[in-house]
Amino acid sequence: MNRSEKAAVIEALKAKADKASFAVLTDFKGMSVEELTNLRVSLRKAGGEYVVVKNTLARIALTDGAHHSIKDQFRENCGVAFGFDDPVAVAKALSDFAKQSKLFALRGASLDGKSLDVAQIDALAKLPGREQLLGQLLGTMTAVPTNFVSLFANMLRGLLYALKGIEEQKSKAA
Image (tube, rainbow, N blue to C red; front, side, top):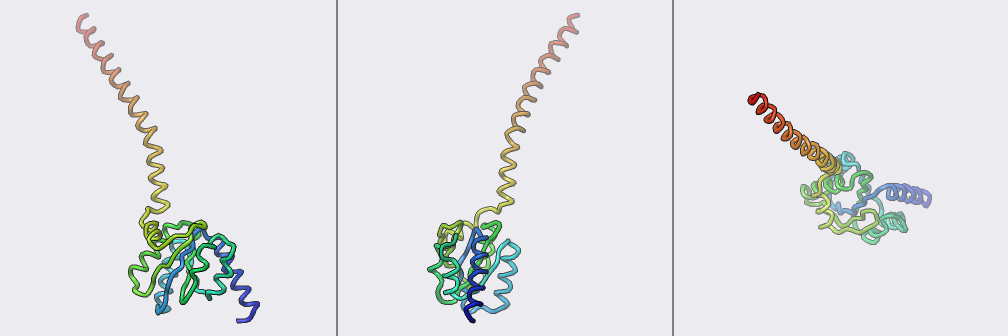
């Protein structure tokens, strides 16, 4: 690879890293191309991307960027997964793949510039997804007005029953 090709790779990786809110460093030593392709497909569905790049170029690309905290972990055979939309979905895809494959392992990650270890990545993968969290939030927000309306309806219903009882008593007395 000549100098201009290296510069192009660095710029492309830097652009991806700057767009991504989540970057995960992985170990893939000994994996087949088919397994890596399956990983890339599952990550694409989750809103992410997997890149294998030379360690030196990756260190240069991540220097002074959002994911500066993981640049020193690039050694031996490693790849980096970027999450652009939902970090939880990408973490789930990577964690599930790591459980299936004996050769694939997570090393560390950077979420909005904060360094995460493997246990924290697994904890992130166990969280509900963005859509589910939004659904729970919406349910909570609509529960308060619904309960409020129900409370007033019950109060008015009781008042109507009392008035109906008074009306019946007056009609019997007359």
